[in-house]
Structure formats: structure tokens, C-alpha cells
Length: 316
Image 1: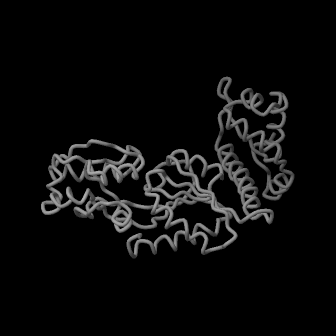
Image 2: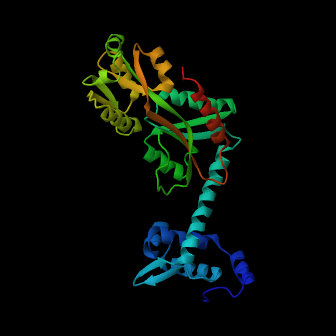
């Protein structure tokens, strides 16, 4: 087999005969690390895989692997080909996902993940805007940790994620982090307790019973860092992944809790608590993470535009 085609025309002719089954076999070999492992995974004999790989290399006019001992290692052209193979198969998944969403047999579908640390009232006010776009839309919402949601976004099970943090730096997932808005933090307590602590806030929180957000929340570290900067040490008597629990304990008079200022009016309306004070030194961010797709879901841009309007006035 020649190392490269003798002309562009020859390469073009070779590419015209590309068999996507051969490309799929090549992708499986790389993904599983060897011909032997790939053959077990896709139930094709090693001999068949090896022959199909040779055929693909003949079609492309390039070798895709270098043999190092008993191992096959991708060369430069192999890396390029694998990158395109991933893009091709991802695009195929997108096609199926898009056709499913646009099927005339059921409502227009929009699947979104919401990180479980985001206040339910904010999620509701953000997501309800989806119905102003199309009254036939079917909203599918999954709430869990950011790691689980990113995994589902990567395999096209989700169209977007509403999160309190952007896509992690260095993530292999091809996606965009759109900043929807940001909010300061407000502190609340039972009216009797709030009356005692309000005048000297935030120093009055020193030694005071306090309910902290769970480990998955960005708010947790930001609030603790703020306390340290102020030189105060509230008595942490509870940590909750579900912010609703903290509100109920605060309503019952057990201690102080905090929530994003954007939902301040809602907290005051729905719970028998008063406001101690606010700070802009602790900031909550809200991101809409969308996948880097050839076919973008129209609801993503709609939600992004409408969601930013929420930050123009508090959520009630």
C-alpha cells in the first residue's frame, strides 16, 4: 500500500469509495484499544476487523496505525481520521435525536437537565418561558448532579443544562456555557431572630446557628470564604442539598439561611421569615450549557433570551 495518493484526484477517487462500515470498525478499534477488544465488543472476528482496517487504509491511501510491539498506536493521519469518525457518528446521533424531537406523532420535545442545587422557583420561572415559544412543546426535565447531566448531554440525551457553574475547564465535551445572569445573596431568619440580628449584620452572624448549602453547590464555598474574609464564624448546624429544607428549618426559628437575592421576594412571600441583609460579595451565577451541534435546538436561544429578563427584576 502506498503511503500517500499520487495526486489529489486519486485521493478524491479513494474517498468517493469510502465505506462507512469500515470507518465504524476503525472507530471501534481505537475506542476499545485493540482489535481483540473491539472484536469482542462488536461481535466481529479479529480476522474480519483486521481485513476491514486494511481495506480502509487502502481506500484512504494512508496507514492509520504504527505497530509498536504488539500494540497498534494511532499515527498523525489516524488521529485526524478518528476525529472525523467521531464527528460523523455524533452527527448521526444528532440526526436521530432531531428527527425524534420533530416527529409529528407527538409534541415538539425539549429535554433539559437542571442541576439539583438550583432553587426550584428559579427553575420554574426560567423554564415556563418555553411554553411562550410553542404551545405544542413537550418539556422533559431531569434534575441531578452536573456530572451526570454532562454525560447525558455528551450522548445527545439532553438539549441543554441549566447550571450554577459553567462547563468545567478542560472538559472533553464540546459545548458552550452561556451566562444567563448573576445574583447576590440574601440572608433570612424567623422574624424574632431577624429582628435581633439585623442591626449589626453581617457581624451578628458570628456564632449564630446557620444552615449551609450542600457540597455540590458553588454557594457553599463562596459563603464560607466570605465569612472567613469578614473574620466571623457562624455555627453551622445543618447542611442541605435541598435548599427547601433549609428554608423550613429557618422558618421554624432554628437558625439563619441564605438564598439568591433574585428569589428574595419569593422567599419572603412563601415562608414566615424576615430579611437580615444582603451582600454582593457572594455571587450566584446561572448558566445555560448547550452542545456544539450542527443542528441547534431553537428553544436554547429562546430560553437564553427570556432567562436574561428574569434578572431585570426579582422573581416573585
